[in-house]
Image (cartoon, rainbow over all chains, first blue to last red; front, side):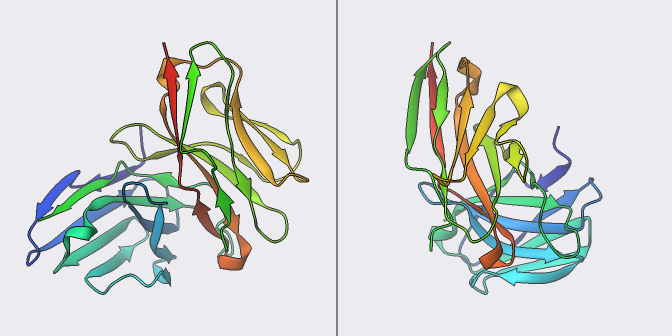
Length: 116
Length: 114
């Protein structure tokens, strides 16, 4: 069973709501990621945290705000979303050595977001 | 520039037949290559990876992949398909030009027909 846990599994929100997605990893990894998976599109890397510092933000709109309080937890705060933001949001972790992501990613089961 | 390509959106194979899911890559230097599988309503699961060494890599659930440097390919294979292999398969590469981030292909849906 996965060592990366995401909550909630399903979320429906209006365009004016504020909600958060949570991810927790129990693998002792030092890097965590948010990916967006939309139908018929490649997996999109949104944010990367390595040793709790954000190292990549792939030009994600500011209505998505990540937070990484420690190496085991990662949040994605959502507000004023658009219907096109509806997607499966996947959290992953890995063990980075000397800042290099050489290993495989371990994914959670995802949070299915629907924006009305 | 695209780092990894999966040319087939869908592959259909009869149960018991061999299967191949194709992947080609385009990165500078020696590639680190991965295959992941995603079952319905689940996250991605790691299958196997190529870092260095033997070009034939064995992974989970009886899958294997062959690294071919001259053809810049890393095709996923299994000698005898099972219905339970039906899923979405992703090829991925660590791209040094993008700070070693793991970049995914668009995925190939594999249907195993009973």
